[in-house]
Length: 351
Picture 1 (cartoon, rainbow, N blue to C red):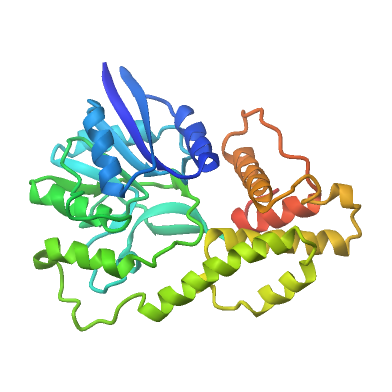
Picture 2: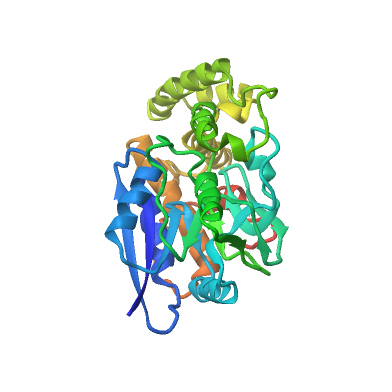
């Protein structure tokens, strides 16, 4: 029997379980068996993917982030057809670029694909190109292969540029790289705020191996210079204090602090969610909601509030994309639902 393997790096079990929920709902092509390989405590993305690739004898492999949710149940049928229609295709994805990036910020070069996204400030629709296209490079949110090529774990030791590397490796080996046609996005990338503090170091690793295939970036400034990395590290330290303050009753102090935090370059996903929770608390207080009906009433720590927030967000999404699911929403106020909806669902959708 033909196999399709899903390979996923995992460091957040709540996200992984939601990712798995959508995988298990997929319609399978005839005669196909599904395997899932979660990789935990990985040393790098390439190391994790190489490890799982060796474990699986599946013909097709889908390497994807734990925060990608496949809302089109025909995803695998669509992708199998893409490979059948293009015999030279070895690698495919849902987001990428027609040409090699011309600037150091590779992620600004994406001009192919059609995906939904969410960064906890808002949901968005990246409708770049609905047509089927050959690509030069792909984004690593989702990569599907028909043949196995080594992931260059000896070259790339972190969590960036593995996707560009693999795009180039497939083309070096004589294969084509494709993005399918999507009238409507097949997946949601619940990406949050990206942590790119190691971006420049990883790019130097990448360019030592692939520089001859890329433009000359030497005249361009670092994407994230040392002062950025220092400021970001400070924000991560402060974040831990803020999470504690939330449960020590310093709500007004936190609210005033966040009103002054205008530069979101130094946010991460937890900071964004903390800000949204403060918005919920403020709105519930303004509405004079009883304490026992408040969002934080049954939470004793930020970790519990974070999990509750995710459960609500995931339920709202299932209510649109998996209406047959019988899971109920956590017991929260309408105010809390509306605020989480505002930050995580598209504005033209309905609660």
